[in-house]
Length: 110
Image 1 (cartoon, rainbow, N blue to C red):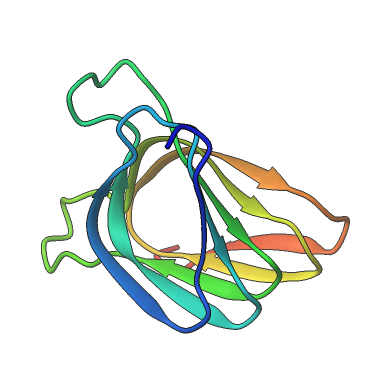
Image 2 (image 1 turned 120 degrees about the vertical axis):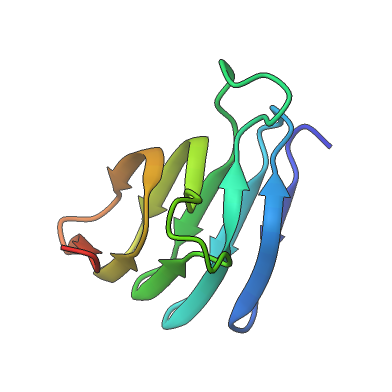
């Protein structure tokens, strides 16, 4: 639905995920890895949708072996809500939001 929220409880691979222009959210607990390729709205590239929120430490990585496939493409935001380091690898088109003075994004690819 338009305001869906999914909370993972372990390292997870979502493969290719299209938020479909819905205000959906994926929450990732401390020290977990979320793998996948996330698009805000594959049928209308002008739309941004979807938020991925990390509780504290975590990793967001690509599910694709092709380095040219973006990890996030026009999603609304990647959030670091707690004290910790969120490591991002690959290419991203999303707003990065720091929810705490101790939140850090680390770019794994330099």
